Length: 253
Image (cartoon, rainbow, N blue to C red):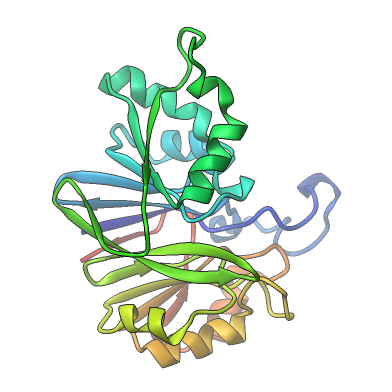
């Protein structure tokens, strides 16, 4: 399996043109973060998690030339706003793009992209098929995917486990029942927005504690906020098996 971090950041922060902080002025490529998304490649199947506002740029930068499906964690715009650009894959692959998500997510997409679902569609608009998922394992081609439900304050969000890798973003709390799905992981990817307390995101200390409880072989921090600090400095504070992810990072296993 191969996992590519297409983006590891958030929509948090102020425009770079007005900001004088270390992160915005860093020349280290590790600190240049697009909105969070990953590509999972398994058994010749390419699965994308989330189409944020940077979707098109992420596809071009990483030279992604094929997608089999898109999985959605939740309905917030920083995870859905790039969907319209899926049409390039429609044209190239000559197929509707399958989208997978909970009912609330798919209903939100139908509202925000109503023109995609109109009875009489404008020629050339993106074409998708909606596949509702529940909190139980399902398959796309030969790939088994297990949802992990986490809470983003009061909003349910799905993380996903594929083989010995799990990807979780926008989590604040995870029930004991869902934690059972995270046993015996090689890689855990988990969000940590910043160091200061936040109502709907794990802090860095909370993420580290969560990782220590789950005990994966390795863990990677994503959905990193503007105020976390620079990659170089934060990495020094982390245990040996925990890493700050960065855009373009590739994991193989």
